[in-house]
Amino acid sequence: MRFPHPRLLAIWLVAGALATPATGAAQNAHDPVFQRLAPETLDVVPPSARVRGEPGAMTVVARECRSFPPELIRQRVVDVAVQEWAFFGYPVLDRVNGARLLPPGATANGEAPSFEAHNRRAPLLNPQESHRVASSIAGYWAVTPEGAGIVRTQNGRWNGNGVDARWNAPWSAAFISWVMCEAGLGTNDRFHRAIAHWRYFDQAIRARDGQAPASGFVAYDLGEQIVEPGDMLCFSRRPVYRNLAERRRQTGTGARSHCDVVVGVDEDQGRILAIGGNVLRSVALKVLQGTPAPGGGLHAQAIPSAPLFAHLKLQGDPVDPDALLQSPVLAGAGCFNPPLAPDRAAFVLAELGVSTGPSSAC
Image 1 (cartoon, one colour):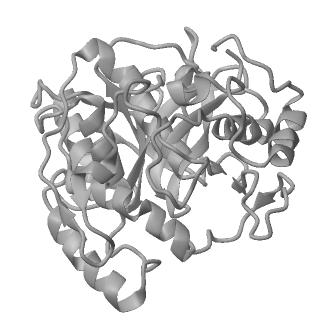
Image 2: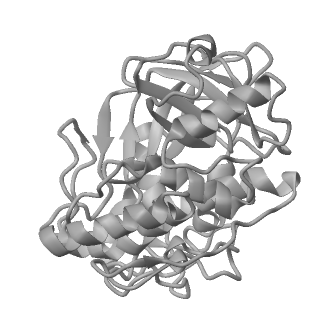
């Protein structure tokens, strides 16, 4: 399926949020819109189930990670990541054009904003939204060895500075760890869950070198393999790596880095769509640059705004490039009455040029 132009992409995907079934299991009563699907629709245990208590007195609940056969992993990775993106309100970051795209309803006064790019730094979450997502972020931490301590430290921050206090450590690797835990890479020999990305991309490098045969991911340089949904793309901020060889010389040492989960490949537009955590203080979708591969598909391309150095290839059966659009969260767009105000839904659908009637996925 061909993805729309990036400007319409953000609008199209937010339409999925506006059309979320009213029967979805709400994560928190603070927000009636961005809900998680009921488990009978999407078999995912929410991250908040791994903690108990309110911010300031939150504790981690021990739960095992899930294990699924390889043929199910790739689509589950996409579905789990897409649901979390929906829960955070479908923010989109266009790395190709260096712009942040805002979804409908993002303005404080409730008016429908124009879909223009904004380069300013993402604002702090307001207290209501911080409270709504607190148990989810804590649940991401809970699957990591250090997670209980991170949550205990955060309780002190919440008690001292309020519920909108920043997390005491970046949570992007914790998000990836939870996605893989819930998607079915349940043991550490399949995926090394950690609070730092380098732990698991080092595992993927070892797998490439024949030293981690059970690893769910194998590392490649950009251009060696086509990018598929379920793969990951990584860059390093400090030190900056340009390829796997540079990282191999420092394997086992810390690196400030970030990885995103690929959820869609738009070959017509030459773009790769990936979801990451702690992006704009949220779970956000990025538009990344792709280049045509000789036999079809796309290779990832490093650009100044996204200096990628590693492509982590998921070891699992392939899925369609438009796995994002086939995820349960988005496949039913248009099937239900939007839970938001009708005028806001009408604005989104008018931009898309579609009706509110049932779609073929209903």
